[in-house]
Image 1 (cartoon, rainbow, N blue to C red):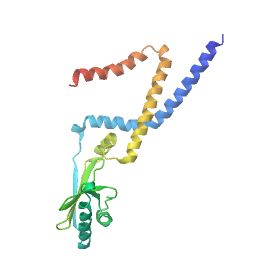
Image 2: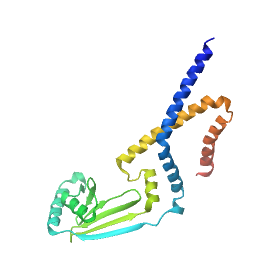
Image 3: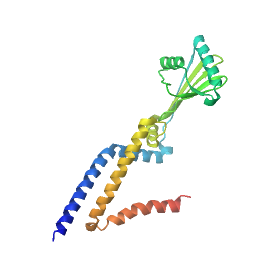
Image 4: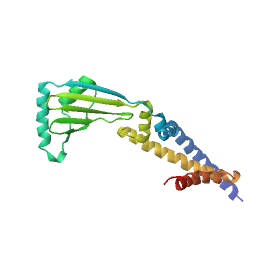
Amino acid sequence: MNAAPTDNRRRAYWLKTLHEWHWVSSAICLIGMVLFSVTGFTLNHAGQIEGKPQVTRLHATIDEALRTRLESAMAEVKSNPAIKGKAALPAELQAWVRQRWDIDTAGREAEWSDDEIYLSLPRPGGDAWLRLSLADGEAEYERTDRGWLSYFNDLHKGRNTGTAWSWFIDIFAGAALVFSITGLFILKMHAGNRPFTWPMVGMGLVVPVLLALLFIH
């Protein structure tokens, strides 16, 4: 005789717990889900709404003392075949670039060849590179900015965004998974009084599967 009240209490407990996890995960995911939804649309229509890139080019010449330091660094790079011609810029050159153009090159590996040093500086929403000629000491910097839309699209893809943003995507994915799984169990607990629940869930699976099978080759 006590089975029904016990079952009801158990059901109420799990329903309350699921709702708590569901709303907490939804609160964590809300802003990220809006961001990824909007950028999912913009990525799908990137060809129609892509902005015009803006390119900035800067030139300068390093002094003789710095050229001598770079020649010494070049000899060190060549003497170590294990690094395959890749090494960070010397601290003196990093300081010069930071002072001249306000560019942080710390922690980045450059490509060292016989006549030049080339450093790629990719970033979300654009690209950049730094080239230094060892023959005449000419330094050239080019930066391409594709606008805010491209910036947020790259955040969506995790392109050139660094470790912190990669962690954010992982945490967001975990929270979104909790949101989805708890939502599924909440649907299950309410499905008895809502006959269209499982047909709607099934439609969410069948429609993309049919589109993939019929129209993607």
